Length: 219
Length: 251
Image (tube, rainbow over all chains, first blue to last red; front, side, top):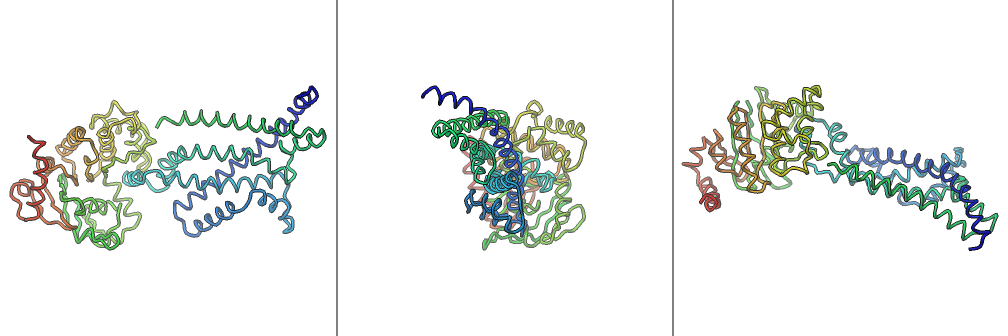
């Protein structure tokens, strides 16, 4: 690799890392947090078998899982204005990623809840606890530990999926790479570089996951 | 203290309980014996509403309830006066031994934490598990887990404790420690209703034995009668088959 390309990669490193830290990471964390709340509610209404809400939950999961993420982004950002709902690019991306994460993670959480042996629920009733107390104190803490590795998967997946937001004008890391590549024609170098930064982010998350899993091992 | 009359329960087309009557007086230790599939466990689960009976009534502390028309409130209130020990212990796996014991006090009965802790340690002491108060269930043997489960049952000072085959899931060498704890509870005058396959225990500790077969009570009476001179052919046959199995171990 010649001197000039090497220099370009060094110069562009910060120009990529900065939108990474300022857009990609916040977009991921905000969307994922909201997504977890949606997922928990979606899973709970199914496990608790609340009529009406359960059907809505199934419908929501069915629609989100059955349609491409990028199409969802286009519907919200380019489509909704036709109905008079105009959203900025960043909030549009947050909404789509949150609901997308919510649908997938709700299935993870639902499975984890159902994996807690039902005998413990019966034991909870027998010591006088009610359903909400049993869920909050016995079932969910155990379910969350089971769900943690697959949820970490979803988080790592989302870091990379945020690159799709480039398509709806969010100036995140991949969009920045595209711009520099277009200007300098060094496509191979730039796209490899941005790939390495995504890899870096995901490596940090993987380490964090390992650390958290170790800490949860006490029971 | 506790009386049930005419309990009926089916699973799909299978009739599991065909009108069972049962009476437990204060301080009684009643054991229910019988072949597997006779409905013993289902009876116990119906009495504590883990299964819903289709018919029958219950008299608890002179209050009459219809088992097929219990409200959620009534069930919750009754459960706070009883305790249940499961075959598979069913300890809360995310809680320590002590937390398992205090959970019912702190969460369900709003007992202050320090008070609950003391009561919990006393209960653990009673079952010989005070030194493992901070252990999680997976760090304990089956016998130890069951003893913690018994501590969890007695800590709320229930009016009656239900035991559902409490030693059936244990390795043979661990059965003794659990039966020992139960024997102590009986000698303290606690009211206990026990479904068990431990015939020696039923014979020596219970003051009343109920033999069930095919979803109905076949015969009941004091242990010396049931074990010594059973009136019914089915009781004799059952006891014989059990004794034959236990004989080699007794040698």
